[in-house]
Image (tube, rainbow, N blue to C red; front, side):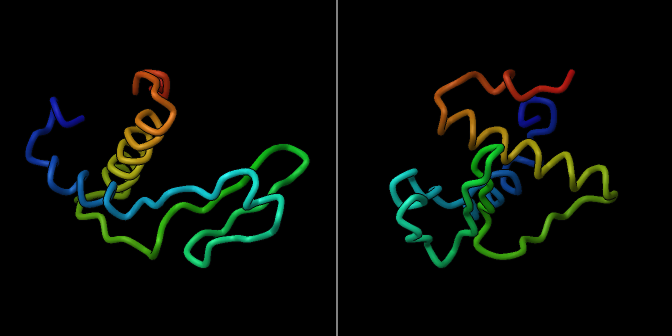
Amino acid sequence: MIKRAPELEAQIRGIRFELIDLPNLTELELGNQLSLTNAAMTPTGIHVAIFRRPIEVRANSNKGRVSLLRFAIAESLAELLNVDIEVFNEN
């Protein structure tokens, strides 16, 4: 998205700045959840909320806001998992 819409780069970087480190498995198993995250182990996997607080996304439409958030999250996860961001592309 940055290559296609460079004017959005600052906003995307701002969203990514709000992402925090996820607790590791040991912390989850011990129940030592960080106060800024909401993490829980379930039978189907690990569910984690990764935002410190509600964030504002400036876009003209709901679809635009969702797209910006998805891109910022996908970019962060790709970096965290050391995979190409295309892994998260739905197309």
